[in-house]
Length: 527
Image 1 (spheres, rainbow, N blue to C red):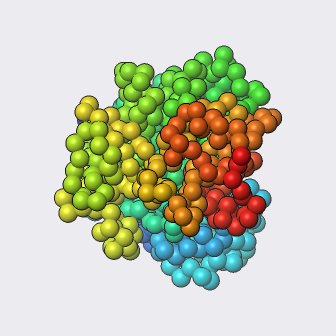
Image 2: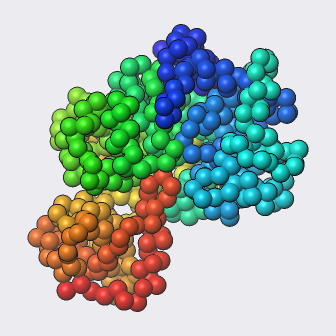
């Protein structure tokens, strides 16, 4: 058992124990623990030579790749703080996060997804007074600026140099500032310590029974807390990451088969896309043994479908909780593995709190899920008021999620507190309605939202993504709902979409969806 949860010493130990063991597979290239460790030491030495060190924030604006991992480990060696940044951000959002984080350096891809990041940062540098250095991954000719360095050049310059010794390193120091997805407002920078992130990742890997023989598909973005935790947990277990820079369902299926992937993590959207592929064939996926579905609400129907070809677990958590709070276990009953998000990890306390009184509930009562433990964030960066709002005096973090905890500690999530629909004096939970509607054979995905109404307060709007090729009407959806749920839960409105607006981490942008419906005056009662 680890006595310290600091990331750098943990991975250094894995590299010493098994230097030739594969840490990452990228295409047809394999990177060993020893090689990655030496690369991280070289980069850390080069960054230290530039004056970067303890407490400096180093943003990583990369797709999943070996450079991401090396940058993280190098920052950890310097006691610097990593700021994961999505390469899919707009220039406006990128500027906001880098300015808010007061990033001293950024590691970025030169070109990716049709975006010229060299040009983007050339335009941004004047607006980022704290940004001292830009480190680029690629082989483009660079513009002349003494603040710009190529990743490989820094590796070369730092090779063979000693990394400055850590002074007073503790696992309570910040390891990362991870920005929330911003689905419910402006993204917040969540400060997470080494202890919070590393212990949480290790405990999650233990539930999965992860071993050095496992090969884990890394298609969940590292900039999201789920992907970040998965990366750290895999390395801590001495297992192998099979990297996919950007999720593509067809390519992922090929990669699972060719790389003999044994563990598959993903958000619900990714699992839906995998099963929709024409090439989807469970007989070619026999290397898979387990994985995790998490990152957004997981329907019971989806879990049942996935478990026919991969014995996945369901996890629940937020960026602020490190991220994992609860997870199902391989030994749980089928009912609990399908109908709950499991029990709390060791060292994590989960309670349901009355949203009116703040009192802690007993079992089987609906309340706001409250979490306490070493996995919690240190706070929102430079937002003390927002931090105080989500903490109780006795140290619980208020998740904003409504749920029920049974007498054995199994948690069922009903939905977000802010997403609760108040219709005619009745409180409705979108998650419950979504789970029911997903059972319709022509429904591929569904999102239920509230629409303002003069009389009822809010109407229920079911936003539907139909199964490809299916012909379905709003009236059919309403009739199905009438057969399966109480009358007051039946959608008043039905709206069809080809796809939902999504965050980079695979969550539905509910606010954007609500705005689209509010602006569309053609939405009418179905039937």
